[in-house]
Image (cartoon, rainbow, N blue to C red; front, side, top):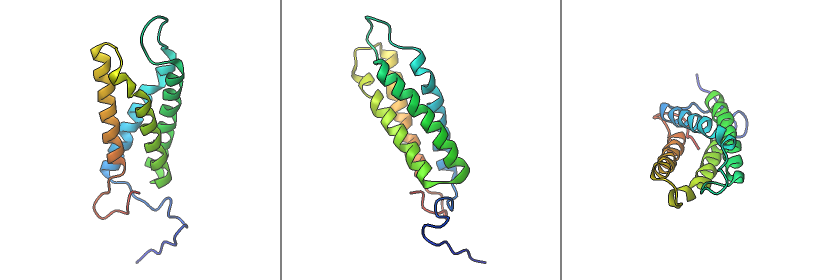
Length: 136
């Protein structure tokens, strides 16, 4: 039996996610959960750290990435995967100055680690499993 998929009809949920894509989405959810409390710990006066606006953006993008990653996991929606990737990328770009700022080395290493983790998560989200429909 064959299934006919009309372009634009059902194409949004006709995708089966492979293991790699699910691992990428799981990493995204974990990073989103880690960024949620950012706004609750603002940089104290007189210390070097991210401005409150960046912390708010990080929290909001973390929430967006959690919601859209769950949506993508449940439905296989390409739109959800794209929104998830976009929120992870923007959140990562917002944190990049932390690698070059005059902050304690441990924080610099943590920022670099989360940047690398974000790159891995996005690459995995868009990976295709053998025999599956295109992920993008």
